[in-house]
Amino acid sequence: MLSSDERTEPRTDTTVDRKGGRSYRLLASTALGIVVLAILGAVMGPQWDPVPLADPLTVATTSTAIGDAAPVQTYDVRTSVVTVQLDGATIDAQISEPVGLDGPKRGVVFVHGAGTGRYDTAFLEQAHALAASGIVAMVPNKRLDTYTTRHRDYVLMAADYDASVAVLQAYPGVDPDGVGIYAESEGGWIAPIMASQDPTIAFVVLVSSPVVPPREQAAFAVDAYLRNTGVPHGVFRAIPRAVGMSLPGGGFEYADFDVTPYQREMTQPVFVVYGTGDASMPTIQGAEQILRDTAIAGNDDVTVRYYEGANHGIRVDGDVDAVFLRDLAGWVLGLPGTGDSPPRIAGAQPVQTYVAAPVPEPRWLGDGDVVLALALAAVALIVLGPLALLVSRAVEEATDRVRRQRGSVATAAGPRFAPGVLPLLVALGLGAILTVVGLVWYIVAVARLALDYERNDLVVQGGWVAVRVLGIAVVVVGVLLLRRCRRVRHDGGQPSPGVVRTAVLWAGVIGSVVLLVVLAYWGVFQLGI
Image 1 (tube, rainbow, N blue to C red):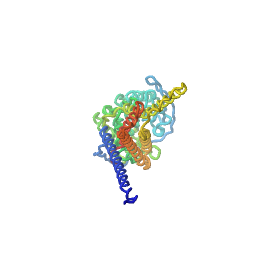
Image 2 (image 1 turned 90 degrees about the vertical axis):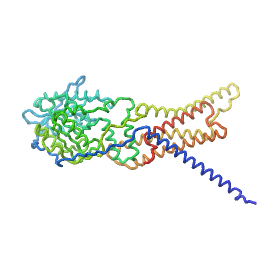
Image 3 (image 1 turned 180 degrees about the vertical axis):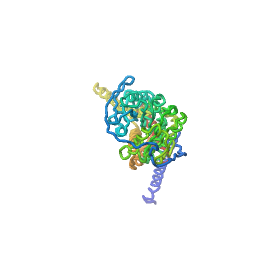
């Protein structure tokens, strides 16, 4: 006769086997779901595979000195504010001029980059340095009624800035034939238009000029920032998918503006300046492109200088590089002799690892409005389902109260979700939404670190792992919900009896699946790191 322990042992083994089998099936189903999402994410959009720069530029000497430039004198500086009439608007501009210098003086009009726009906050050091060297410097306010994040017209902006050139050319004591322009960053897309359309402009200074179209420059900068921040390799997939798509709400037509045709018509002497600490610009490719374009115009008066450790604004430790200011003044004052004085390319050795190139266009989700609409519709399906269920229950309870008040027999309680179905459905939808929120938070956090040139492994590495783990957890919940519904049906029941509950179940599942596919598109489920 078997003891009680002997009699129960086979049941224990069977229970263990069943639990092990369920765990294995759960693991296998989750792995299959992740693989399917990873494949979808890979085939739905372009990958990011930038081409290495194979032809590095070599400087002739580490000295940035302009060969034929004479020593720069020093003068006191006087400032005044003038009004510039534009087409349909007026702006103020500040003029800084040397005191005690007789005779016609050269002049410089400053063209703003993105993020700058007022004479009292932009180009303060540069304008003062030029004026102290004997050059009249004019910093106009940027016209903002036609300039927004979504809409910019560089040709119209060139016409606005050219109005300031005309004012400075007519200013007392200024040589009208000696007025040029100083353009920084985004201004590098504007200045060549001005130079090609206004032959009275005497020279062009291009500081941190992007040269390539804005979309290409943005992708190049994002790539450099992310590499500096140390993000996982999988995050780079988002670059062409974000930069290459049309953004929600439309606009941004200027993203594909090509300045090349205008650079090929520049005949003025050009001073090209970059800092080796500027990761946002294709510093080698940009200079080489300007040299090629101006050569087409028969213009060999191009001088290129690189400043050691200087950032996008040619600043080192917060201040504009004093050597750059010296070289700039010497180059302007020494024209036309300094236009072709050797060496043509000098300064610190620049480094550019990858080529700024056209951004692959997303195949499926290239329309930002569609992406946003999909995400919002999915969230609406997830959220409105439980709300519909609450309304349905409220209606049922109100009907029962009315029946009881009239003395009628109350109806039986309506059908309910099968045990375990509703909690899993809520967890699935809530988890999908939280993963999307987590991904958005991660992108914003990494963007802030990248723009500040900072590293934080806890945020960059840990945040990405957290988002991916949360996404995997949602897949696990989805598998559990599917298995629970199949089990209920196998036992002869209904997971969501009634039209309302069936609609709630399907709405939650469809909404969650859509969000999971969107997350897969942005690389959350990609295989590998």
